[in-house]
Length: 107
Image (cartoon, rainbow, N blue to C red):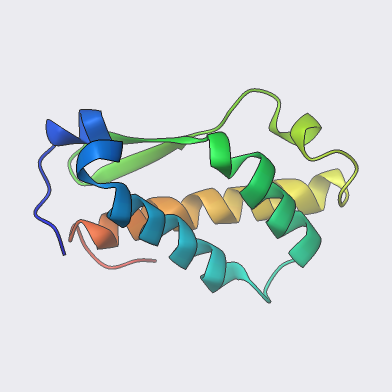
C-alpha cells in the first residue's frame, strides 16, 4: 500500500494511478454476479470511465459522476435497477479507496 498524502491527491493520476485503478477494479469485481451484468458493464464503461474521485478529508472519498449518467448508458435496464447498481458501485469504489489508502476496512 502507498502512504497517502492529501496534497498529492490533487494530482492523483500522477501519484496514485495504480491505487485508483485497483479500487475501481476491485469494486467492479465485488459486485459482478450480484447485479445485472449489462447494467454493471454499461456503468463501468460509459460513466465511471469519466468519473472523478475526490478526497474529502478525514479518510473519506467521494466519486463525482459525469452529467446525465442515465442518458450515457441508453436503454440498458430499468431506472430502478440502474440507480441501484450505480449507487452500489459508487459506494463500493469509495470504500475501496478508503481501503487502498489504509483508512479502514471496506463495508
